[in-house]
Image 1: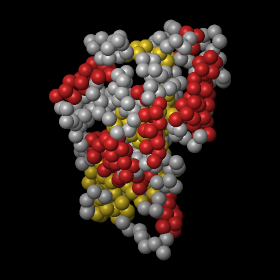
Image 2: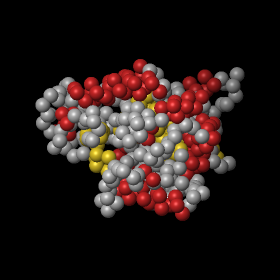
Image 3: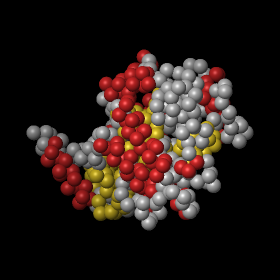
Image 4: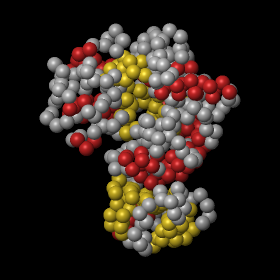
Length: 454
């Protein structure tokens, strides 16, 4: 049987075996392996120019099929203390070399941008861009206004600058730190602000659609970080949604995000979250066709939390200032690592985190190749001899091969019996009956299908 015929047969079998599921997902233009790459301790002065360390690490990521590198706000100069600004780099030559290196390894790279956040002390800032009665984001060294997507002046300011970011450096899209509160649309609009449609959040939807089109016109991708009010949106407004900030419980995050439209790029905030082990990241993501964003890159030292000449929020009242000090304390006592790699990382480095992430990525990537389909959280059908236990999620991934994911989120071992023969991809075990322990995820591959290619 040829690969094409086998794929068609696999799909026919799957459609016949599954009657109901949470979502049937067609897989198109999906980049499963993504890394947020720490460049340095902004607002200290540092070089973005790639080092041997960067070349080796980025090569490792590329060898394992990572498709997207994203860089955070340290690429620019949001406080205007290093010669750049919010939309230009403090080290343009070094940044260009870094972008070129990523491209030479076959990966895309996107930078931080924001359709909402802007430093109030910036000389370009205009108070008419936001509602002064609303809260600001005042943390560490910055005081960011939540500029309104309903402000024509704000749009006229940022949109051409976003275009220059894309075109000047050759980036492959943007990731947008929204800087938007869902309650804002309940407030009266300030003078000069316009909601372009009568429904809630219309201004945000419209602005995000413009930025997404800007990225797509250049063959790029658009990632949002925040909580777009998807239920009230009338068109897709992102390619990837990055969630996880402030999350303490990965199980709760899974339950609250499992029905969000793809593609989800979860990143549990390890400055706060607690996990039993590294496997927990994947237990709560892979069954729902999600894969955790890797927090990696250059070691984070915590120095960004106490740069001379800047005013910081007090350690006693600012979580992020306090977290920087915790990272610094760990770095001083562990100069050889393991390291943290960003503010969303645990202050204490986790030695096996990257190795385990790469191992899971190697297992996950074949399951989500373009052209495949995924039946997520199967509820009924002929695939199993009984209903899937309430605490177990079963998801089927189908292309030229067939994969089954079983995850047990309960407190007792559950047994799932399938009408098909499976093999555990991480052991030699095979069969139709599969006990799943509490907190365990099994990654299985179907065995009772023809595999010869003609």
